[in-house]
Length: 247
Image (cartoon, rainbow, N blue to C red; front, top):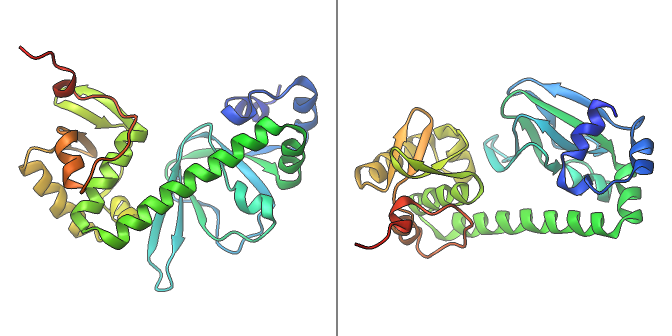
């Protein structure tokens, strides 16, 4: 099995592929490595392939009319991305950029379509993936429209805890297992780097978060949910305070 196909097998969507499908894919897929900050595709590019991230991290974003950047999502190893335009045949509407050195496996759009036609389970999985990403973007859009900068940042921290949260004992809480710069967070919530820095400082002064060098630990998730103006559904790990047995 080639390296490209080994990477594909690490993607949950393609683990069910049988030997025949693997044999047909072998000459059609190719991999490429991108440096940190290098574009993988740009708006208006032809969407001739879907992609699986093999290693690294990729950010998906959009550019506003005045040239500002908005980050829509982060892609982790084993995830499929760029599939929507590849399936409908239109040009790219967003950009994908390597957030760190990344290896990507490219699957021709026609190959993905044939696989989906032959495997209803794969088609359903991709449909669910598209739906999940749409819900996340809709939730972020509502946050942009109706919440303050502070509420939007707190909502982002809770969303990151849901996706990347790891239990932490020192300091106690939930550590975000993703390193984002203040500018990255500003690009996600539609704010400025300076505002993100100020709000994070306020949250730390209030004891709600603990901030180290590109490391953030959420100390009190319950209070953060209240600060975001309502509880958010989450699969994040419980903090030590939440799991402690009453004396």
